[in-house]
Structures are given as structure tokens and as C-alpha cells.
Image (cartoon, rainbow, N blue to C red):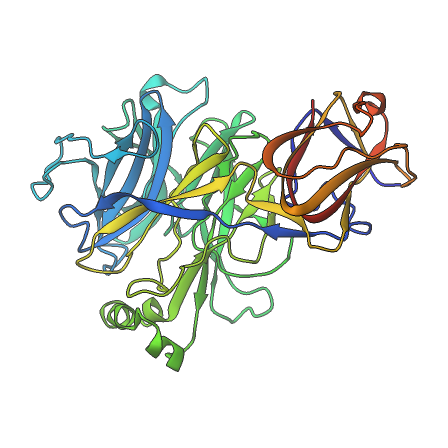
Length: 475
């Protein structure tokens, strides 16, 4: 007998197979794609056009939104190259501006928005929601710092920086030196503890002598000082493929779910005729000449991952974001790096941001706004011929079933109630559901609600045609 899932009145998402009886379901899980909208800001001041802009991360505080980003020489040696952290701000998440802070020495910046100098790799900045956090350390950053031992050898480690106002940061303590960290290393606080996700490397599982693969590791802490031993996160597909960043964050529409948007790294082994014809061939060749071979052979896109416990993750292997139609500056190593964080539009969408022209010298780096449906990172989808989604046995509290869904004009969804052995319980189906809404309240065709089934072991069967289901909940 299958384990019964207690939904209570929590929202459940069709992002993985947790709720779905795969033996009875014919519809398929699919990743969705964000909509590219427009440029909302340009990184084009001082050295921003000539060197790299990396790892923007957005946070919300009492004054609106801040996006921090790292300006650095992407062609330098990691152990010697340093850059600076800068910030842009917004009241609404759409219109961005540079605050003229002017407390660090950057005469090349007409509007001096630099907040931290002499850092080795991109800092992740977040606003600490821990109620026990010292108010002088509410803004925290984690980033790479090098220390020297007694014989002058440099040691790479992940360090913590703290700030009271989000502008003046001081270095505090080392977090861990058991990793590689050349990425955006993220931190979340939930369930009374911090979790830090960072970059590591490991040898291929099936080839111990092969080239090391980029991975994601996690450590935990109650106080941000003492941390657990690193552990590689696990994926549902069991594949061993390189992921460049992690972008792990708490999903704002449900604090019990974690999501991530890792950059997926793909490195071809040789220059090909296709690369010769790709529009960005010159940028790729320049990167190979100035840096190393892989800088021109690698390309990147972005995928979507989700988790309940932060250790085991469902991974969609189809791209969440691709480099788009070819132009002179895309399909390169450095595409599809989403800024960390989601911005609530106040309506049915979240805003997401990414920047273009990562390796193109002499060009501004546009900050592009994207939109994604709330709960809409993935769905379970039915094609034209009717398909079904059958849940595992559940119990719930509440009177009404709500769904986040989308159909075509011809498409539809009907809901039936089954017992845990798949025998039909509802003598009549729900009314026909069609349209496109993040919250549709469902009742049966005779007007009755679901209250008679609460605290009873049931299954739901969704009969669907040309339809997508994103999430469901009882209320």
C-alpha cells in the first residue's frame, strides 16, 4: 500500500513526481521557459564595458531592492586577479539606478556605486532573516578570499563579510576551505539554520581518471560560524554532469520548497565548422587567445531544479533558458547567468534578470528583465488526446480545491475523486475547467465542494486535453 501524503492545506507543485502516481499518469512533466522582456539597465560605466560583470544577486530590504554585482578581470589568474562589488537599486523591481555612494576610491565611475574593494571572486549578498541575527550583521556576503600560510602559499577559502546598512562591509570569519568556490556561492536561512551551497569538483563516477566535474555541495550552521562537513547534493536523474552556479533559493510562494537555476556547462572538445559559422565566432576565438582553449569551446545555458529537503533535488534536463537566436555576442561561455532572486510583480508573474555580453569587450552589459508565471517553472502537460494525472493517496483539510493551470481554447480539465484503490468515489465530475489563471476554485458540476472528502484517503484524477497544471491546494 502506498504511503498517504498529508497535504493539509499546503500548496503542492507539479514540478516532480512526489504527488504523482507515475504508473497511472499519462501526462508528462515538462520544464517551462521564462519570457524575455526588455533591457532595464546597462552596466556601462568605468570598466564595466571592458571587463566582466558577474554574479548579480538581488535582495529585498526595507527600502526596496538592491542588486549587487562583481566587476572583475575575467582573464586574470584567480589567485591574483581582484575586482570590486557594486550595487544598483530599485523601488519597484523594474526601474534601476546607481546610488552615488562615493566612499571608495573609484575615479573612473561618474556615479560611484562601489561598496567593497579587493575581492577575489563574486560575492553573494543576502539580507539575514534570522530573528536572532545581530542587527549590525543583517547584510551578509560570502565570497572567496585567499590567505597565506607561514611559507607564503595561498589558500582559497569561503569567507563571510557583514554590514549593517548594505554598503559598508567588513570581513568577519572563514566559513570553509573545503571546496573550490569559483562561482556564486549561496546561503539561505530556514527551519532555524543556515545552508550554504557552493562549488566543488569531483572525478567522474564512471571514470576516476577523467576530467574533474563541477558539482554543488552543501554545509549547515546554526550560528554562521561553525559549519558541518560538505556533502554533494543528489539529483533524481542520477546523471553526473557539470553545473556552473547553483542559484539555490527559497521559493517565495512556499517557504517549504527550494528552487535553483544552475548554469549548465557544456564544453566541446575541438573547434568545428559549426563554431566557425556561429555569429559569435570572433568573440570565442578572442577568448581562446586571451585566456584558455575552453573559454571558446564551452557554451552555457540554464536549467531548473527543485527540492523539499535541500539535499535531494529533482532536475529537469531540458533547458530553462537558452542563449536565444544567434548574434555577435551570444552562444558563448557565460550565457544564461540569471541574477539571484525573484521579484514579485504583485500580479501573476515574477521578474527575473540576466545580463548579456558577458565576454564582449567594449560593449555595455544590458540587464534584461524576464517574466515567469508564479509556480510556472515546470508543469504536468497533456497534449490534444486526453491524458490523465492521478495522484498518490492523499488526505487534506479544506472545502475547496484550487489549481494554477492553463489550457488552449479547445482544451479542458476535469477532476474526479477516487478512493485509494482507484475506485471512483465522486458520482459527478467537476465542472469543465478551461482558461489561464493562477487561482481557479473548483467545485463539482452540481455546485458541491470537496468538504465531504476531507480527512479521507483519496486520490484525485485530472482528465486533461491541451492543458497544463502548475500547482494545486485545498482551502
